[in-house]
Length: 410
Image 1 (tube, rainbow, N blue to C red):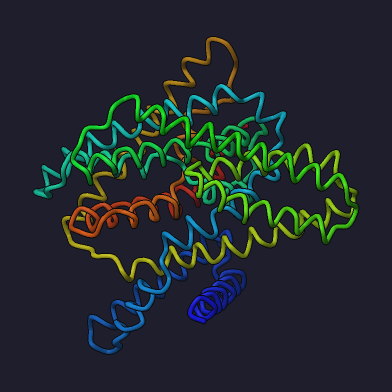
Image 2 (cartoon, one colour):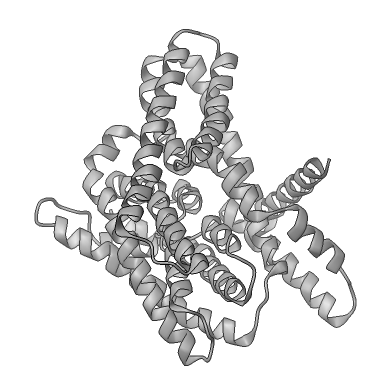
C-alpha cells in the first residue's frame, strides 16, 4: 500500500510539473520538471526555516519510504536503459566501437583518478577532512555520464549522426565500468583491506563481460520467441518480461544488470525489430516503450528535484562544490581528449568533438543514487552534497546550453 501511495504521489507531481512546464516555463520537459520540483523544495525548506510551515514529518517520510537508490537502481533503471538502447542503431554503434570502448573504460579510470586526487586537495584546503579513498569513491561515482540524462537531452537536440552515436553509446556502456570501480573502492573503504589486482580483474570480467553475455543470451531467447508469434500484445509483454526478469536475474547472479539491459535492448531494437516484428508490432512496441521512457524520466527528475530536502548543506560544502565542478569538467576534458587525440591518427572526427563531448557528458540520478548507497556518516554527507551540486550544474547549465554546441559540431 505504501508503494502504491508513493507511486501515486510521484506520478501526480510529475504530471502537474509537466503541465506547468509546458504551459509556462517551456524548458525541455525533464529539465523543466526538475527545476519546478527543486524550486518547490527550496520554498518548503525556506518556509520551514522561518517557522511558517513545518513539513519535517513529510520530509522524513520522503527519505524513508521513497528510497532514491532502490527506486532508481533496482526499479526504474532497467526500463530506462532498455528503452534508450532500443533505438540505437547497431551498425552506427559498431562504427564508433573504438571511441566508445576507450571512453567507457580508460576514460572512466583516468577521470576517477583526476577527480579523486584533485578533490582531496580542494577539501583539505577548505578544512574538510575526507580520506583519499572516499575522494576516489566520489571520483568513481561522478565520472560516468548518466545515460538517462544524456538520452533525454539528445532527444531535444540536433547533432550529427556520428556524434550522437558517440555520446549515446558511451553513456549507455560506461556505467558498468563506473559501478565496478565504485564497488572495488567501496570494498577497500569499508573493509580497510587491500584488494588484489586479480580480484579486481575477476570482478570486472564478471560484472561487465558476464553482464554483456547474459544480456545477449536473454535478448536472443526473447528474439526467438518474438519470431514465433504475430500478436503485438504478446510481443510487448515478452519485452516487458525481458526487462524485469532479465534485470532481476542479472543482479541475482552478480552480473551487471546495467550492461545486460543495454545489450538486450540493442538485440531487440535491431535484430528483433527487423526480423521478428510486423509493422504493427514495431509501431505498438515503440509507442509503449516511448511512453514508459517519458513517464519514468518525468518521475526520476521529480525525485531529483525533491531530493534536496533531505540533504545536509553547509557553507563549506557549497564552497567545495563550486571549486570541484570545474575539476569535474577538466577531468572529463582529459578523459575524452586523450582517446580522441590517439584515435585521430587512424580516423577523422567531427569538428569540436572534444569540446562537445566534454560539455555533453551529463551527470544525473545514477551518481546521486551511488552516493546514497554509501555507509551513513560524515563522509556520505559530504559526498552526497557535492554530488548533488555537480548533478544540478550538469543538468541545468550543461543540459540547457548543449544545443548550440551540438549545432556547432555539425
